[in-house]
Amino acid sequence: MDTLKSVFLIDENVERRQSLETILSFLGEELKCYDTHLTIDSKIDRAANSVLVATDNYSAEELATLFSANISNPFLTFGSEISELTSSNFIGHIDAPFAYQQLTLLLGRCQSFRQSTQSQQTSSKQLIKQLVGRGNAIQEVRHLISQVASKGANVLVLGESGTGKEVVARAIHEASKRHSGPFVPVNCGAIPAELLESELFGHEKGAFTGAFSSRKGRFELAEGGTLFLDEIGDMPQPMQVKLLRVLQERLFERVGGSKAIKADVRVIAATHRNLEQMIIDGDFREDLFYRLNVFPIETPALRQRQDDIPLLIQELLRRHEVEHEATILFTQRAMESLMQHAWPGNVRELSNLIERLLIMTSGNIVDINDLPQKYRYTDGSEAMALEVPTELDERDAISAMFTGEDIFADVEEAREDGFFSMPSSLPEEGVNLKEMLAEFEIDMIKQALDQQTHVVARAAEQLGMRRTTLVEKMRKYGLQKEL
Image (tube, rainbow, N blue to C red):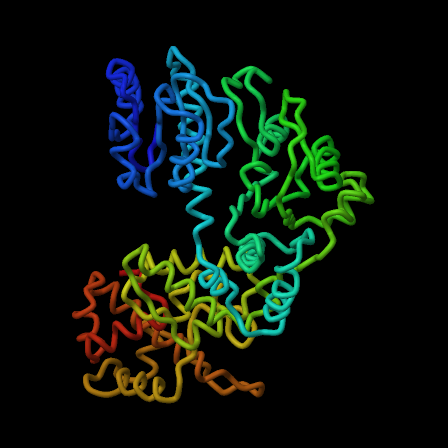
């Protein structure tokens, strides 16, 4: 299986330790082995994927001390099973004889714990930075976060996909009194209905096929912190009933268990669905809706805060430039064009576009013609394929076409050669001279490139202009792909 970092294996029983080493090496894990936990008190790395520790020589109190001293590391035990272990980073017990299926399952849960822990370690300062913008819509979201963060009320975050609902939930958690506790996210739509109860509430050993050991659910893992139920609208109705009971009584039971466990967590839910319409359709419980909807916060769509797009682009560039080891700059025209897009995918769509441009145009200035076609706009309408030249461009174009070498003897010769078509008389409704000149210039450049087998230097010489001038004109008219 894939591994994030080293596995620490702690066991004084050499024979048993070597047996585990063989299995873990076969699974592709990088191992660090120690005789006792005393020799590695200062060596357990916060980035370790998992720690496997034998229980035979240590009491429950000693193990609890070790677990709490390394709260970011997930622990698995083997040897004698100790039922009193309740630390949030205790993942489970490995039964003897060691079985491939159970070991891979538990190591996978360790990996999930590590990923969850890493996401919890984002500082509140960074989270607030993710709420980028100066517009009224995002300012209102910040105001609502500041109002509810210090309270214990349930929060329902509403908004389209890609608007940053989890960012809002994390910001609430970091600004709350529970900020020192864990932030545990659960995507209710990504977990199969038959597994969701076990995922939320945990299960006892033997509760169902494959339950090799007891396991804590997300409610227990979030003890003292915040549980984020993303896409709550996708939760099946049988689970809605059970969640309602937990929210009302603040008690739950593990699957296969009978002991009531107190739910000391704050619940923040989120959805892109219209829950009120789902209630009318009979797909969502009305009583659960009112339990969750104590304090609603709606995240604005990006099209509702287009003035924030330049700030968002700068923030996204800051994040992605390091990852892709690249940098780009946007022209004013490109920025204005992006501000006119509807952004159905919201900030997530903008982030994906920034990554794409970093990969495709690294080290360059991004102009409107460098954007994908659907992002090109001019004066509120989709940009035309050809770009109308400025007065200075017109003068340069005319100079390049009609000075220096005598490219055409006269207009009639040019017309006969098929370069352009000029009306014999000016029509009463008039003509667009700029577009005609642009079309004429594009046609000439294309023919010169074709005649010179797309060798730019030769085409520039034939057109009586410098190579750099031709390259710039090709870029302006979007002719690069024809090289």
